Image 1: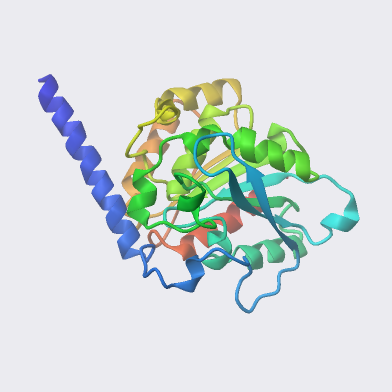
Image 2: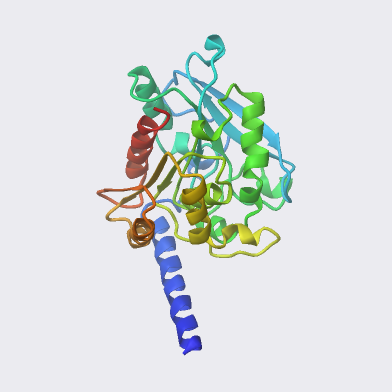
Length: 304
């Protein structure tokens, strides 16, 4: 009886994993290595001049791997003149992405500028870190992108367990932020949605606004010294809602997304436990046009 139950869960997990990888192929996330959109470098959108300021930042790492990582921080238009402090949104990329993916593949600059210019969103710092796992400086190779299968199967908690220490504290130290939970948000797409779910659950006192865009349902491998990071999500999420209730918690996904069933299942778990959250569905699948819409909605909803 036990062995049959184990085999059932193993088969179910393999099926979800296969569907997830298929979705990455079908939506064009797995592309030829020569696609210029995926190369690190000057992170500006083609034929668009941003209203704000793009800062490329390198910061030291406290976990095994590269000695430094790079992130992109998008500052509001009047950041250097205003002298004000701002809330912060940490926006994570998906598999086969890096810190410029939301700019080069999505429409982050255009959306952000439009919302800020028309007072449809509270001005904030948008932080785009690189959350891929790399072995060392050579493996990282100036924030090289990874194929989706490589990115998915290398998640081991090293980057995530040090996220607050390495990324959040660095941003709060080097930029004029409002360094408290109520003025921090985290969101991620696909694999980044998985990371956002676990980061908010493992660091419940850090983020008050949370959004999962088409999230991958689980980490495929949990090897290494920080493997416990990706365990007991339900238990950790219960603790989050009971002791540090989020101001907003969103799950957003297209009804045509192959990961829709797992997101709906997560919604039902939260609903069953009376954890306040929003489950928002759009048309379409695992695609950038949905993620741009999700980002637009989330940025316009937080820090009110």
